[in-house]
Image (cartoon, rainbow, N blue to C red):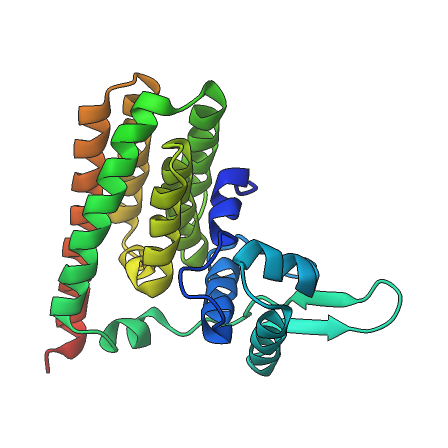
Length: 243
C-alpha cells in the first residue's frame, strides 16, 4: 500500500533550522527508513529539494553527498540520470538498537509519542474523510498479513496515516520526527505472535472509532495501544540488559 500524499508532504516541509546539510540528510534518511521514499525511487532535483526544504541548493548537494557515503543514495549521470534511493537491505538487529538506549529514554519517547498520537487520533475522528478512513482500513490489513520487519513498517505506516487524517501538517511532521528520533523503537519486531494479533485488533478498534467520529474513544484506544507497546518494549529491554 502506498503512503498518503499528506504523510509524504510532511517529510518535505520547510526545515526549522535553515542552511544545515545535516538536517536535510536526517529528514531524507527518515523518509527512507519509514518507507516514504521507496527503494530505487528517483529523488526530486537538487533545486526542487532546496525549494521544498527552504534551504540553498548547495546545502542539498552536501546532504546528498553524505547520503551517498552512507550508501542510501546513488547518483547516475547522463540521460535519465539523477539521485536514486537505495534502501538498506540488512537493518541492524532490533536487539542492538534496544541495547543502545536507556529505559528512561524509552519512557520519555513513549510519553511524547502518546501525547502526539493521541491528539492526532482525536482530530482524525473529527476531520477525516471517507478516503482517509479507507486508507486506515487498508493500513490495518497490511499489519494483519505482515510479520517481522514488515509488521514494524506497517505499524509505523498506520500511525502516519492517522496523523495525516488529522489534517494537521504540524502533527504529521511531529509523527514523522518522532519515528525518526526514536519513536520507531516502539514498533520493533519483538517476535511475539500474540502481541501481533493484539496489535491488529487494536488497529481495527482505533480505525472504527475514527470512522464513527468518536474522538474521545479514538484517543483513548490509541494511547492504550502505544502504552502497551511501550510496556512490551521495556520488558524486552530489561531482559537484554539484565545479566
